[in-house]
Amino acid sequence: PHRTYKPFYTLCSFPDTNRAASSTAQKPDSVEVLKVQGYRMNIEVRKNGEIKGDARVTLTPAVRYFRYLSFGLYNELRVDSVQTVAGDTLTFIQEKDQGSFGVVLPDSLPEQTLRICYTGKALRQTDGEYSLRNNLYWYPRLGYLIPATYDVTYRFPRSLKLVATGRLVEQKSEDRALVSRWVEETPSMGAAFTVGDFDTSSFRRDDRPLSIYSRRNRPKSMRRHIGGDVQNSLYIFEQLLGGLPYHQVRVAEIAGNVSFGFPGLLFLSSITFQQELEGVMEALRGHEASHQWWGNVVGWKTYRDQWLSEGLAEYCGALIAEFLLDGDRTFFQILRGWQNDLLEKGHIGVSVGLQRFGFSKSDLATSDGLRAGPIYLGRRLGEKHPVDYYLITYEKGAYVIHMLRTLLRDFTTGSDERFWQMLADFVHTYRGKKASTEDFKRIVEKHAAQNMDWFFDQWVYGIQVPTYLYSTQLAEESGKYWVDLTVRQEDVPPTFRMPVPVGIELQDGEHRTRLVEMTGAQKAFRLGPFTSRPQRIFFNDFAGVLARVKKE
Ligand SMILES: [Zn+2]
Image (cartoon, rainbow, N blue to C red; front, side):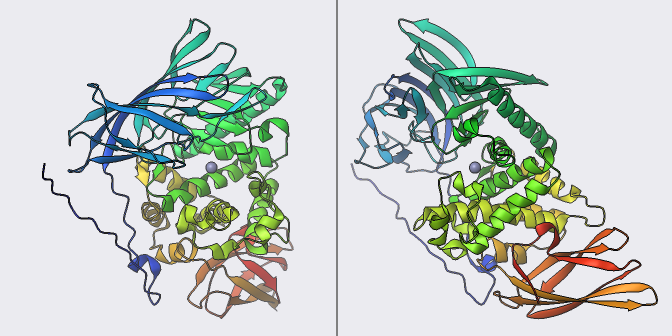
């Protein structure tokens, strides 16, 4: 039959360098071409790590003429058949070594359910330890973050335990296997599971139980410790960011050095079950716990906006160290680690934050660092040097969040109330939705009560980092004191502006902090009067700005 196809265009836009990037570059949101109602899956897990999957996906195309559907699927999983529920076989295309396959739809129906059967080695299996080889694409996945309900029945060897996202609704024995069904009725960004020869411990605080699944022979005290950190993190984030929709949270140990947060299920790397590095492990667990909000309660629109999820999670990890440990010593150590990674390119070691992904000093030294590009490039930052993606989206992203805290902080009282309100408002506004960088900017603008183009243009859409060279002089007149501060700004255009906190330690023991608005090549400030003699000056107090600082 004769068919008419709509033409399509690929459009590019490039910002005019004479104008601010955010006012010229077009940043379209991804087009939502379909809605996914839900997944109903039967997954048979074998001892060697292979799975046999039977997935039914119910979806509604949101545009007309929608005939070709592309699913993501880990390249070692092979599709055996694609059918309609009526049993009609559909044409599908799966190339070798491709992380996706395409299905030609029978007709533009308002809603349809596809049945996809597939097999392959979805789990890595070493010495009885299992972990998903690909946490996201172990089932035919439509889109990256399309909320859907999940109803998954797993069949697995009796000798293993299985833990998955969702609510365990039933478990029974069949022949030599166990069959368990896990249901997530709240539309969620994804589903995951793992199996293993686990030891478990359970905790209960308020109404939400927490279970820890570790590999065998880990001391119970370790599970208790991790359970405590995760429970505390969830509690703190609930106070700051609002309630969690999940009735139960499970934590499972997985092999390797990557951790992952799914709705109600945290995969924590074996690293965190083996050693207790004061501060670092709390931050890692806090990072993953906060992904219950970042990426699950609030999604992100495109890969360009994923820094919101990772930057906020990395910052939340540091906050856990700040709240649960030695005042703020560990917190500022973590910040210094980010500064060193970003500004010193491995000359002062490499932060544990990057080490946990397996990166070394020399990876950092040979990478492009800050010049890899702006935060807004997202995963493309890592195309040449993988470390740059983590460096920029996690660490610079987290630093951007810290700079927003600096801007919103009341340095007279030391209160961060406006910052917490901004974060809570962001979660509240985008609960169950996906946010873009511009959406986040609008929330920041509301709480900062100013246009924030300048900030986002500099730090999110730009790559420059200022160097401040400062000198101070003390002035005294009839028992009153002033600090005359001169600051030179380098490595950025003269229009680059940033409020910089300056701490002044007075003889009477008081510590005052003032924000000075730095811009231009050189600027002079007079701070005071103080009734007690200033003893020490802390330029860029609170580590408030990502900058190189030198005293002249
Ligand atoms: Zn993360």
